[in-house]
Length: 124
Image (cartoon, rainbow, N blue to C red; front, side):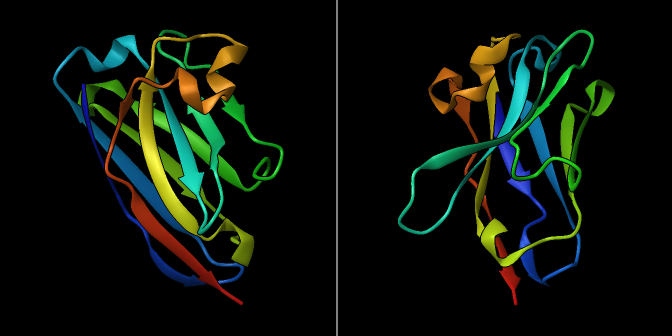
C-alpha cells in the first residue's frame, strides 16, 4: 500500500491543523493506519492509530483529548485533527500502515508501509 500525507504547516500555539493520509494500492480497509512523528534529533514516536473493521482508536498520552483520528474507507483516507497545538508537537508527521489490531500497534516497528511525511511547526 502507498501512503501520501499532507496538511502540515506553520501554526501558532493553541491553533489547529488537520492532516490527511491518502492510500492507494492494496485494500486500504484491511490495514490499521497510524500517525507517527519525529521531532528534530529524536526518535519516531507513536501518535495515534485507527484499526480496520470496527475502527478502534489509540492515542499517545501526550495527545489524548487534543488529537482525533478518523478514517473514510470510501475515500481511502485517514485524518488526524490536531487541536490545541503546542510547540512540543513540532515534528515531521508520517502516516503508516500496519496489519496489527492490538496493543502492538503502539510500536513504530509494527508499521510496514510508510508515507513521505508532512512537517508540522507550532510556534510559541
